[in-house]
Image 1 (cartoon, rainbow, N blue to C red):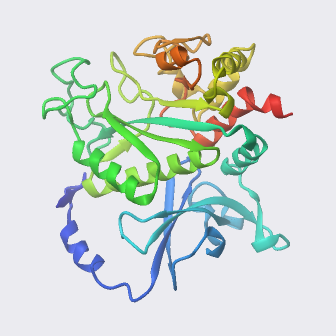
Image 2 (image 1 turned 120 degrees about the vertical axis):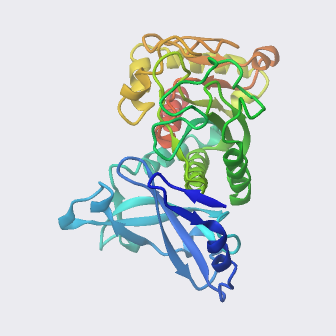
Length: 377
């Protein structure tokens, strides 16, 4: 397969494959993955003499934080702490992907690891998840995204400088070359996530042409943020090989087109048990308490709610950002109670407000903070 980039350059991936098929001579390639200063994925590779049995066997590493917007040039070193291991779908076994958190150096601390840098949102999330561990919080996150041509301007499948012939309608969960644009990417990502060990639970075409969704979960506690973060990294890598750009912008095209969200489904052990419906309503009432709407929306995109404000208008299957609402099977509410949850009087609810570019560690921690943590204080 040839991958063509915006400057016209073509790379033949079959040539790369010849070298990738060479024996690795007993070595293991460990791809360290972390979030940069703009919450974008970054990565670098370390050679290991053998496969680790756990993250404890992996060495702490470092990178130049001044080149990622996370440190000044005069004190540029940021440390990478391995947190989770996934199989590497690009290199295959025995090679691995290593999800890392980011820390300041501290020569007096164990392993030289100091406190997390400001963009390290995982540590605070993990602390909250540990506090409420007995509640067994489950999250299922629906990641919507939009594929763009290599120019980063034209949604994939759209005419250059123009609009699709037909309005929204035929593209959601669609089939056919006239409706579904980019399925080879979507299927490649799906299988890569399964191989990696990411708990991906499904895919579908979305309402705007060139827009897709996949779901991660249910995952417990901190695993939700870890698996979603790694799934995004894998998607970016897959799109890179196809010469396609992936966008997590919550409103990639202005006008009468759907935005992109990251709907977050949530439940606790009590909500999933008999009589759990009352606990679900209690959690939703907490989300609607005075000041909570503003507090959550400020946390539901990386720019303090400004990105999401373009999406949460009350149209295109969203609720207005002005007021928190919830309802059964209502996709025009801030939070939706599934019809079967109402029927069975137990289950989960869906917070439809998080934007497609949200930080899963911040969002899952915020939901726990409001809905569960008061019971553990």
